[in-house]
Length: 109
Image (cartoon, rainbow, N blue to C red; front, side):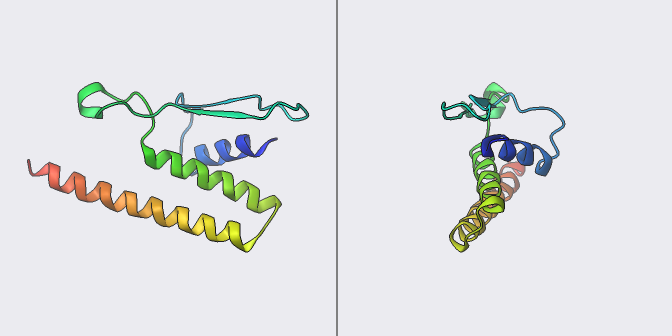
C-alpha cells in the first residue's frame, strides 16, 4: 500500500470517519506502477452557512498531510520528519483554537 493510501486510512481513523470522504480522492494508488499517485482535494467554496458543506476545510488538509508524514516516518524515521509532524500538530491546534474563538464570537451575534 502506498503512503498516500496509508495516510488516507489513518486520516479516516483519527477523525472517526466511517465512510470515505468524498472530498479526498486518490488516483494511481496501485503499487508497482510507474505512475505517481495523485491526491485530489475539494476545498470548501464560500461559507457553510451560505452554501452548505461542499468541500474540506483547510485544517483537514493539514490533518491529511500530518498522516502522510506519519506514514513516511514509520517506514523511514528521522528527526526532521518527527519535527515536521510536531509543527503540523501545532498548526492544527492553532487552527482549532481560532475556530473556537470564531464560534464563541459569532454565537453572541
